[in-house]
Image 1 (cartoon, rainbow, N blue to C red):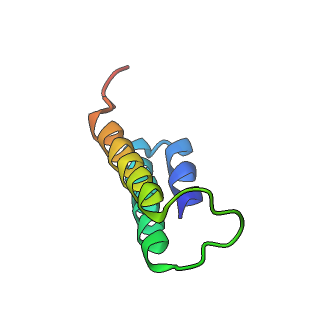
Image 2 (spheres, rainbow, N blue to C red):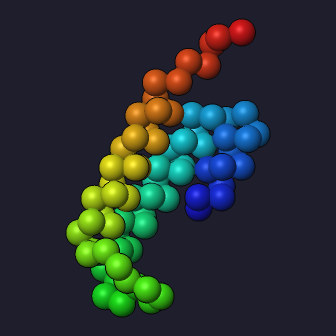
Amino acid sequence: MAITGIVLSAAGRLRLGCYVFALSLLVAAIARVTVKSPGGLAVRRRSVDVVCYLGLAAAVALAGTLVRLDVP
């Protein structure tokens, strides 16, 4: 899903790509809440990961909203 957002952004659909990428971060936050064993090396608490994912998703969505597409 994140790759789709990046491809959409590269293809000229910047705002839609940002929203899709933010949605993928939201899905990652939900997955981190629901999955008990993340696998690999877990160095942070689950709550820290979820807050980081949600904050980054909000920042990406806000950046996608604020970008000016009408500048020549």
